[in-house]
Image (cartoon, rainbow, N blue to C red; front, side, top):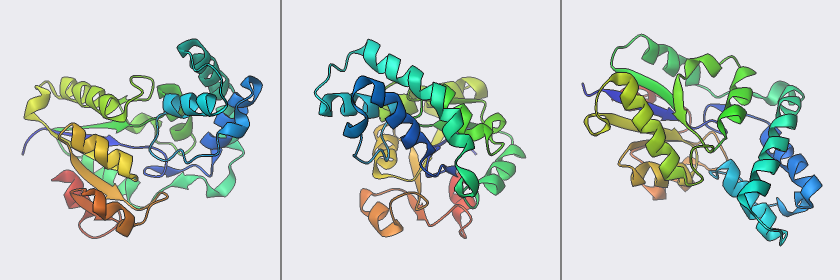
Length: 226
């Protein structure tokens, strides 16, 4: 068995956030006059890309300093939005069982591959008790491009395993076509789950290696573990 790096997306894949992240970003954009511009789908986008697009849609300068300011405001209100999300906020089927199964095996590094900035991902996962399950990751704070942040996550996973990333099997688990495309771009195995805004039939044409309704489906754990 090759050393294996697992990179899990957060929103729509690991957890359902009941719109908490979207509400927090819109609130953070409002002082800059761009809250109303964030009407597009955030699915599969990195936080920086979301903020950049909203600012540009509002015809405002999307400087790195302004994006940083918006994201600082986002973190200031995200925990509040997460806490008020209610019972619809939770972990998707099969995720905890998959993480439990991997934890009992040697040769696996379990991390995140998410467009969330790192602090935001931690806030979202803390609510459902999953933050400590992920020792590393590639985040939207590492790169605005999704493929690049996955590459960063893979390198960090390989470092934890003590081997070159080229020797590793890298698996990206996500719920959007952007997750699949980014995983393909780094040569990863792509496991798509229809727990977000896309159905299995909508995900299949993007050619993931595997598609499941949830990771609780028959064969899903084997696909992740390889």
